[in-house]
Amino acid sequence: MTRARTLSKIGSDPAIFPGNVNITGVATATTFSGAVNASGISTVGVLTAYSAISADAGIDFSGAQTNLAGMTSETLDSYEEGNYTPEFSFSTGQVGSFTYTNRSASYTKIGRLVTVNIMFLCSGIPTAGTDLQCTLPFAPTDTLVGTTLDHVGSCIAYYAAATGGSYAIGTVGNTYAHIIEQGVDSDGGGGYDSMDFDDIESTFSIRATMSYCTA
Image 1 (cartoon, rainbow, N blue to C red):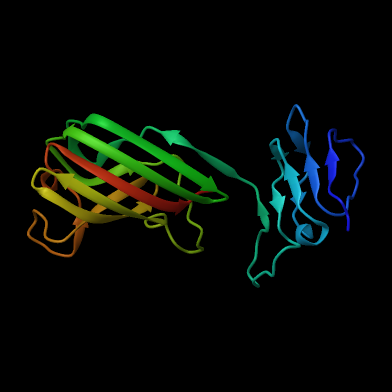
Image 2: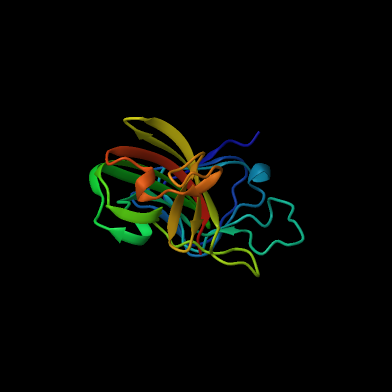
């Protein structure tokens, strides 16, 4: 049986330790200048780090999985989470502005995939405008060849006002997420339609979750 090794300092020379390795007592984060190779971890044991591991070049999973024929990358090179201040607007014909009682948004970015959660409480809306849209933390990117940026992500939302609430869907394209209402709208049509100024009340709230790809 191999006993776990405890390292209080990390030297510049590479070393291989069988079994589990615990890193303790490191004042600053341990930095790897190249990609962290995740292959064979289950074989050689578990690496437990009590301080952050910096992997500026990404984490390489090439030795830990079987790839499809169309694989283009096996390196996870980005992770970020945080908050931003979202903005509502109408894509065309907006007259006036939105008045916010409260608004917030959080995001998580793993590789190219971005997930966003937003919340709006509005106490005033423009007097004209069509196609309600919301700003995003990262610019969307089309990941398919021969297509456009019109629909590169999805959105599910819930709209609530004094007269009631309803679910809505949406798409992510170009630089905005577009909220699309479901059911009969002010134009007298059914199915799905853009959410326009005359489809929402002056005081309303929207909660939404969006998912899309960025560069």
